[in-house]
Length: 193
Image (cartoon, rainbow, N blue to C red; front, side, top):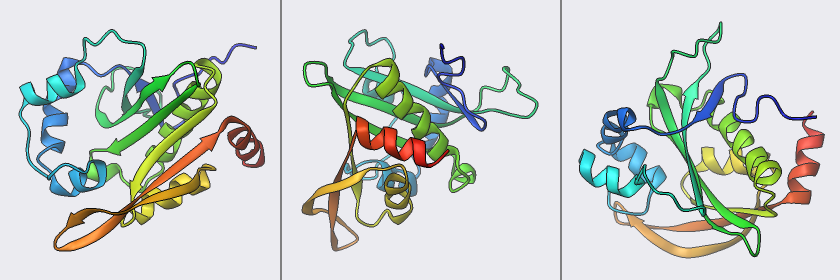
């Protein structure tokens, strides 16, 4: 049976990021709260040109998959293209069937409402079923309790820590390394249904 909703769930759908999305992304890169959860780089605003180069929407390589996270309204309205977040599978190593995943819900009003969870579930199904990968990794800052809870609920296992990896407001924080193997994902997916 072919999955008919490969990149669409009940709350979100994963689509291509387009140049029309750049104003929203630029706005997010002016939000220090978002940046401090998303990146180790200093929370510094970026302009459209800098971010266009960062995301390089014309990139044709086969080692990264960038998705826009968009809400699915009731009733389903395909014309609702509001961008609420970004999700990326990056650094795919095909010989070893591994990748890193990163996610950020840029629109603060949509955080903590299950959109990130469903987007991650769609991305994991895409990684394991469509790309036939075996391992998905991610990193998360030790102060991001909400993300840590989400990743562990999805079956990710903490595999290590980059101790005192970053400094924010005069304090040092670890950056945790998490991994999810295909058999673990299959088991966690089966137990949640």
